[in-house]
Image 1 (tube, rainbow, N blue to C red):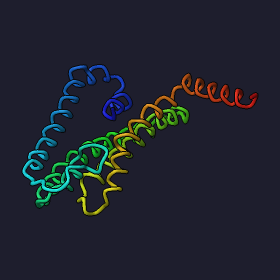
Image 2 (cartoon, helix red, strand yellow):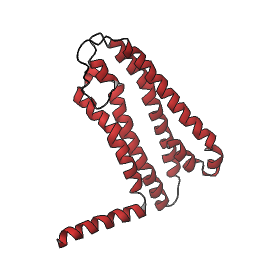
Image 3 (cartoon, rainbow, N blue to C red):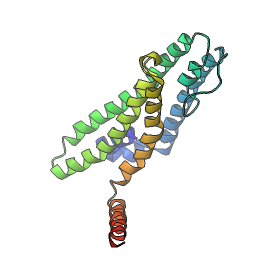
Image 4 (tube, rainbow, N blue to C red):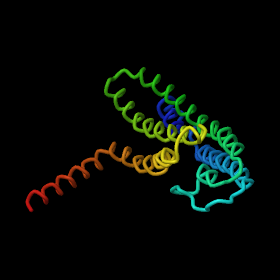
Length: 198
């Protein structure tokens, strides 16, 4: 999405020739393949662990950290592999996104009209906010050793990137649409009117 915005703002005349369907499919495929391969590598190391205690995982879903917590063998290798694979998987896309936004900001600053600059900044700021929230929680949860934070902090961080960020994503982008904003305002005014007259 950041690359799409970069091309749209920094190279608007070449947008259709750069952002082809074929390129979009390649980008999606690379993301899926790299993500699946790295996670598969971590799970190979998880299968080498011995589990002798309870099989109940104190978590929302079956993630790496809670599975390693119920293992009775040494989990240092799993933690090391998780940190080593997660760091490039999380930080590389985040660095790329920040790089594209630096280019976008430099291009926006060249726009002469104040309203044009304001519109471009407001369009990008919502996406950048969601990206920072998502990658920030991912980085803390997967790139730092588990012993640095408790299970409850892990749960909260997981909740942030698995539920809160996807929940806020459509809200942030929808509220930018004038028609949707007007419909929400009318709905709340209608509800307030019904409550007031009862």
